[in-house]
Image (cartoon, rainbow, N blue to C red; front, top):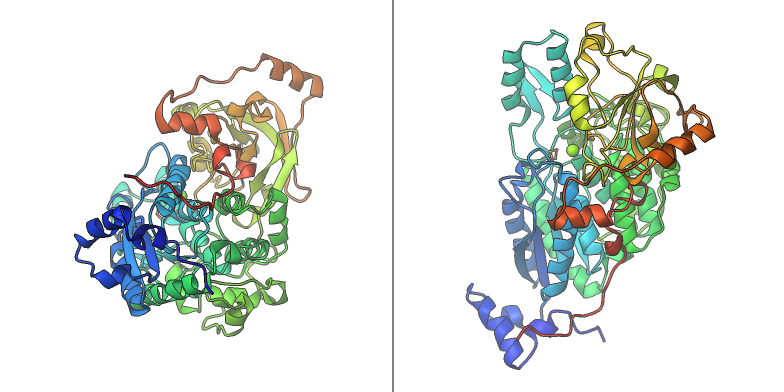
Length: 569
Ligand code: FES
Ligand code: MG
């Protein structure tokens, strides 16, 4: 006999409480039989006009509902906080954990049996998965899908990646401001997420690699009719998942995280995947650490998309998308259950590649080893990361003098000074941009190259900070230095003129000063006063974990799957 469905504690009661739960819902025109015990499916929607990447999710919610009704379920759509990466200050990342709380508490408080997560823009996917994992109902993701390829002056242009290129070109005098402004409209010409392999498409790809969505969810363009069909099929499937009692934690296992780590290397995915996967794993109860990311380090770069390659997500879709990447991983791919119930290896086996320049075969990759590297040393005792596939080969093992920016304001005010004492060999250091410091760990780690060097033709330098960088960015950029400066990490103690040695080959990052001197500086150090003294941001600063632990709030790690027994009236 199957367990009584969760929704019966709301809609199955023959008393005053049941009357209250059903009657008010009926004001929307739902008939009696919607409450007859059929699976209630929550559709968790991050649609918002302030999150343009998610602006297609209202339509997709209708697609999911069709599938739920068809399969004999009862769909109920509900809004949660929406995180518009390009619109929120100081950074959408500050609010990822707030979205996760909103998702978790909404799922727990309402009478649903299964959930479909509708997200897309960078932080919405991890925030929703974190929240859902802490309740652990049957769960499937439907992503926004990427925008159509950007088009401008007859060429394809990519979200983010070409913004960084164009703004550098303007600073170098190679592009007019008029052209720069004109490129805006061509870059974002349909609904959907960034169509480069930025964080949004990375997370959607990893969701697919973890088996948490239907196959092809990651790459189908937002406006492709097949995405609406996928939403419909997801609605059908989630009802079956409730019947099969196939929970999120049955799909998100250690094996599926390992598949995600390898897939992240193969797609040339975002460095942001590290903090997000660590945080999600913490909710599911899987002990994932930075060192687990080494699993990806010898996986070659297969997907030829910006920022590591030249194509865009539309091309990736037409070439076959994620199923092809998973197939190319071959025996390395772990056996793991997907939301379809079967093994991920099965649908990987069925994949076919339609363009092997867009998705390279494993034995003819774009780069031989594409995974992220973890660096450790006296400058980053708990680790830092770098994405070698987006870096310059000649800088991967480098020693140089530090030039330090104490704050983001210091950087903005001085980076373009003609008398800035820097050369192409200088290592730029930025402090105060970690989870507690900024707060929220923004995407400012890919500091601009100082103008005076841009004019000399310098396009890349070693840059080190406790910040993140956009998944669409590139450069020899060391990120997520832990502990961060504001938490008293050694990064706080670096002074202009100190020598730093970074070796990506050896996985090291060291400040070349004597230990006694470092200890003296440590003793004299005091933190900056906090920028926020009330509200959510204060709670965040007081409780956020460091980047090597996923930057979740300490009290949100783990899950609570107990039923809520107390009634509201
Ligand atoms: Fe939303 Fe890139 S800004 S996906
Ligand atoms: Mg971003």
